[in-house]
Image (cartoon, rainbow, N blue to C red; front, side):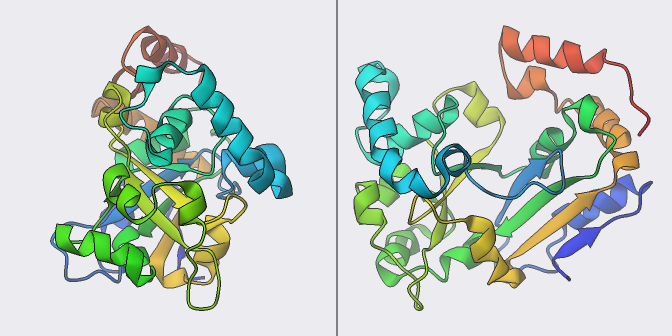
Amino acid sequence: MENIVEVDEDDLFGLLDVLTSGGWHPSQDRIRLPFAYRGHSAAARDLRTGLVRLRGDSSTAVEPHILRNFRKYAHRDTSPGDSDWNWLSVAQHHGLPTRLLDWSHSPYVALHFATRLPERNDEPGAVWCVDYAAVHELLPEELRSVLEPLGGGLFTTDTLSRAAYSLAEFDRFRGPDGERVPLFFEPPALDERIVNQAAIFSTMSGAEAGLDEWLARHPELYRKVIIPAKLKWRVRDHLDQVNVTERVLFPGLDGLSLWLRRYYSQRGKA
């Protein structure tokens, strides 16, 4: 498939070029590349959300209960606003299984997550690249209309709240053939981790809906770039040299410890 891209096992800069090249994306009229990147240490991993991995076909039924209890026990000043989108962002950021997926503006951040586990460096990884501007061009008019005055691009929790304040309101949106629709939005700057990771979230208008299934019907809107196992250590060394490490992406002692643990781990066979 043309949207599955494999690079040579010794071609680091070829990998970087594939991730940052604008030659393939539909949004050709934009100055900056409107890409969202997501890295996986295992190339075979799909785009199921944490909620779907937790509850599968019962995700829709259990989602309101999980979020209600999160809001009940979280501190009131935890969320920068009371909309479902703000609370959902906080929940995802703190590890709660939700309908959201984590992405980044930065291909380097995605490469970090694809190479952060030394024990997985004997198998291929992957970086998903999605043209979110082109995805949003396929949204229903009511959603697109809140983006157009801002020049398109990404939603924020505020702009999303104008079109759908709650998840129940959002879930009524469908594509022309009745399919669930995806969108990408920037979360509030909750802390340095969100900022340093250049975070983006994706969501679907349905707790059980799968982004990878939607992308399979629109293959022109994404690339999945395979990172050969033998290239992972070279990628990792490059990221350490340009200071894309746990110490930067996870500010604080936890990130420092993660960085040192990985940096001084033994290299595998890959």
